[in-house]
Length: 462
Image 1: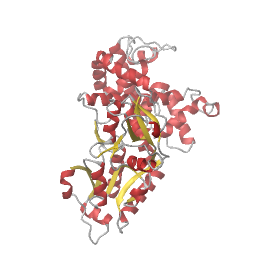
Image 2 (image 1 turned 90 degrees about the vertical axis):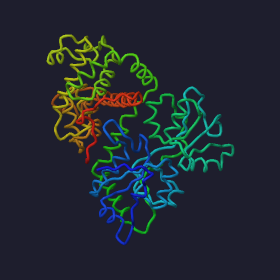
Image 3 (image 1 turned 30 degrees about the horizontal axis):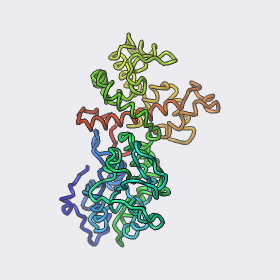
Image 4 (image 1 turned 45 degrees about the vertical axis):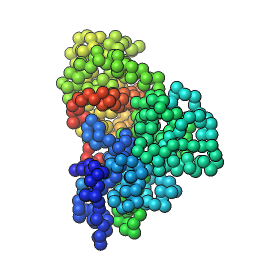
């Protein structure tokens, strides 16, 4: 169970430390109190409920301890840092960078992700080549690792100046850069990757740091019981592959970001999607699939062009082969409603064929790959995955095996032989980005559409 507590009521949730150890106190009171930030990289309310890498990690940790999770969301990073210092929480899971100054105050758990700090500007402006040559306002979150980095760099860059914000989050500053309200900000690379798909005017000028580690922060106390439990937890999820799976789920599809392609996609959402949206919603509802997922697949297939024809002869908005269309009872592949109905039906049919041991969202990503390359070739790739000593039930492992279907060393021992295995990998990653963008646009426009629970939900345990 998750309790999301307003920061105003924080003192109703404060851990009362006494003679028992901290970890015993947590278990006795059946409550893990965690402070976080509301952002795409940490915690947010998605269409399927609470989401974000930090949320998923602390929820798993609370489940590991067998206690309820209470999330506190302060108004600012400054408040968050103060609450750690004042021992009013158990853990801060907020995408915090380990820095020298912070290590003097907090005890950090094991590092779980690396980022770089980057200078961000608007594409409409000239790209700066160094911090000493920026021309305009540089604004950052107060008391952030970014401000700490700037303070350090100012020792050698005398003219370096910036404005600090106590009330704004990094995401808000990125929005201001995108809107050309301010010229520059500094953000972590993972934040940039997530936001750049939606704020398509953002550009990275350069890194201002070497890779930095993110970790949970704990109050510095003599009692090490909670720290040791956190250390044991991260050892476990690193060794069993769960951490890799979570990072892949949140960030694994972001490498294919393309400014021009995303800008065109945004325009097509506005101009083309309304013509076909009703068909997507109807077909998806019949198959109990999220319509935005089918729409994202349709965009990858044809850019929502009902007359599209590929060099290999597949046709229509969902690019059905003649054989597949016949099997599905689709008489006219160029009829948009029929094509979308067939595409949704074929995806669901493929989804249902995937091994029952494959859980969501990996099941969905593998079904997409099979939609593209064929179910048989997907099965060959899963067998190669097993030969490599990896998990054939995880998309993060299978997507590394798929390209091997194009190498004779590997495909000669498979049942179905050669396949252009890199294509389904790119296919799935593109659709994941299109799907995320479409959900973001829908949320921005306050359009509420029920999403079937069985698709893309976050399991309670992995």
